Length: 286
Image (cartoon, rainbow, N blue to C red; front, top):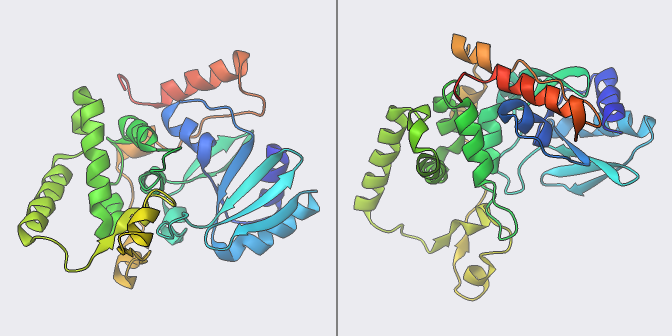
């Protein structure tokens, strides 16, 4: 099913990137068995993706017009994601310009940039799901080669969320703190001190809605706090994010080479071979 979906999208020329468990494995070597396939694409490409998948026998629907559509084949499904559920992680040109080639299910395609994967996962803080460990694993595997400046730009006015995850990463991996650049830690500390000295914000706002759908309902319904809007980046910021930057040589060596992940990889020689290949691609000692 997943192979058929990839082939359908590739043959139709629909621009997309693989994300989810397959991209996470390609970056970190951490294997997760999954029944679905996460595909990131521009919202304008969803109709073309639907046509391609329907021709291949899938049933399609827009599950939430703010961020996700789905294609079904029995108990398996494809997630067609064009934003994050909080509205902040809209798939834009920057995603594609920094996407990395990989071999997924035997097909050459793009996987979502590690910076954008971290950006979207950083805001997942539900009672039943928290992606902080994923963020830590991605930093540990790729931190030395990541474009931290671009990641900081992605967070924009929500840089405190990045600071929270960077602090947690440094706690979890004290022997690899240097994978987060010193200039970033200094900049985030400077902003925190500056903000602390400025005092409380003038409005009674609770930004919990940006990291959880349900955990802050009490604050809005009982305490009368205002929810934070999902504000997109200004055009200037969007322009900087879409500007092509050639990654450093180390990044070209260690990231984006692609780990072959085949259908049915949960066990045996196929999974072991893929894990060995992932370990080879990561930097020594990581």
